Image (cartoon, rainbow, N blue to C red; front, side, top):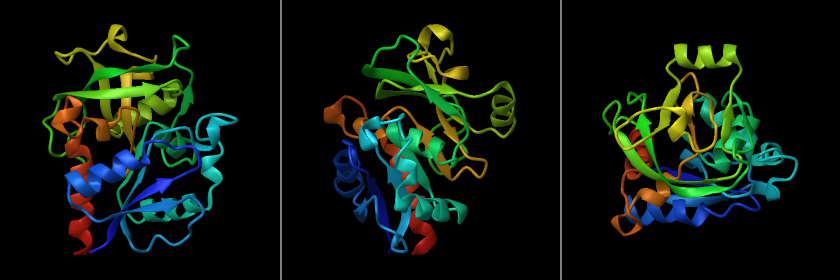
Length: 234
């Protein structure tokens, strides 16, 4: 049985959280992967955690995309292995061209840290299959550059390909600018690649995977990723 890899870039601060959930909550094999590693052949899935890789110099994720490990992450993604990027991990996946778009500073130019509601838009993926379509989740966000941007043409392509995984909303699932915490286009909180095996999301599912944290709504995102990937290699 292969392992789930948690990529550790200099400056990330959510790697331990993700590792804990995968190993202690979901009881799966997991290991830390240092950013300069070039052999990921023992892995069945990869998580890029949140934080401030390389201090967010240049821009969030702008330097991490050059780390040696990213070539191997791209290879795994191309082979169909699940890749999940959370917060800064999402930003890295965008910078590495594994996901479309770009990131801007939050619309209010402030760091936002709080629980927020998101709605499941596409529940036919390995990450979201345990949820119902339009199900509302209560998951923390914590970011200063979470304003996800797509050109008009890129947004159309993303919508046509059903690549939107989550949208920011209120507790009833209403999607509007009023419930958009950062200015993201189309209230997008999470987006997929065309093959649906790469997911980037700004909310932190690892921080909503145990009752003691106030919500378990994020647990199934990591659970779906893990058990789908392990089924492929057992």
